[in-house]
Structure formats: structure tokens, C-alpha cells
Length: 237
Image (cartoon, rainbow, N blue to C red; front, side, top):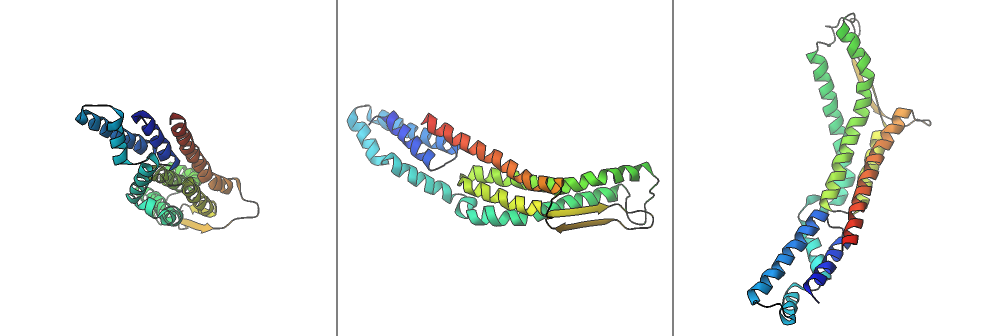
């Protein structure tokens, strides 16, 4: 077996184990340099030398299996995919919601839109009141979309199975799709209100449908990118 053929088989075996393209190429390049250094040290490229280096490294399948195990040991997400992509999305989305709400409240306070200090006749209050529905839509969509993008990226970088990307997206779609919210600015006589809840109607609104579909759309795009990359690896191998 010549060196290039061995490296092609190794690349194919690494691709079958769904390792990230960047890690795969770096690993193959390092082994290629190792083989080259071995041959240069022996000052020969005959079959005996090649046989010696392959005996030292092992079969492509064995090398790929060891590389995959070592790679997956290096990340928490690879060692605990259930916790990372099924449990943490449930915890992370409320955190992002709270962060979004705090930003809304701090912005309202900085503009002087606090209960007991409001003049509804000002242009500022009227502008804020017109923007309130869009802020509610943003609270229902932005944190869910951001969380989905983060977990899709983590899954791609960790090189875990595509099923974990899909699991995280479905968890976020279900949780985000069930969320409801209402925001009312304070007036001279009433206090401001921010209500958040969960529920699904028999006929969901267009917004609630969008809340459910957004994480799935982001996840579908991420899965397509991962599959495209793996097809490219297979073809190049």
C-alpha cells in the first residue's frame, strides 16, 4: 500500500465517523507529515520502509477509531450530548428571555417611562407605545432564534451526530412556540405590565406558528450545511 492510498482510506474512515472537516484535514496533514519525516529519516522510499511506518500506525480504520474517541473525549458536549442538547436548551431559553426583558425594562427606565412618571401626551411615550408590539414579537422570536443558532454551532463544532442538532431544535421549537407575552406601557393612571406565559391554542396565531417554525428553519439550515460538508468529505476521499 502506498502512502497516498493509505491516507485516502484514513480520510474516508474519519469521514464515516462524522468528525468535523477542519479536524479531519488537520489530522490527515499531521500524519502525512509524520510519514514524510519517517521516510526522510530512513533516506529511502522503498516498500520496506512504507511497510514499517504502516505497521507502526496501524490500519486506517483503527487509526480513525482511536482519533474519533480521543476527539470526543475532549469536549463536554461530546461526552454528554443528552445533557448538552436536550436539557440545556430548556434552561438556556428562559435565561435569554430574562436578559431580553431586563434590556427592555432598563431601556424604558432610561427613557423615563416609569410608573408614576409618565406623560402620555409626549412624543416619546407615543413612539414607545407604537414600538411595544414589535418589542413583544422580538422577545418571542429573538431569544429562541439566538439559542437555536448557538446550539447548532455547538453541535457542528463538537462533531456530534445530526440527531442532537435536531433534538435541540425541536426542544427550542416546542418551548419557544408555546410562549406568549403581553407588554403594556404605564400611563398617568395605570402601571406598566409585562405578562409572560405558555399555551397553545387549537388555532395558533401567525406569530405563534412563526415562533415554532423559526428554530426548525434554523436547524434545517444547520443540518443541511453539516450534511453538505460530509458529502464533500466523502467525495474528496
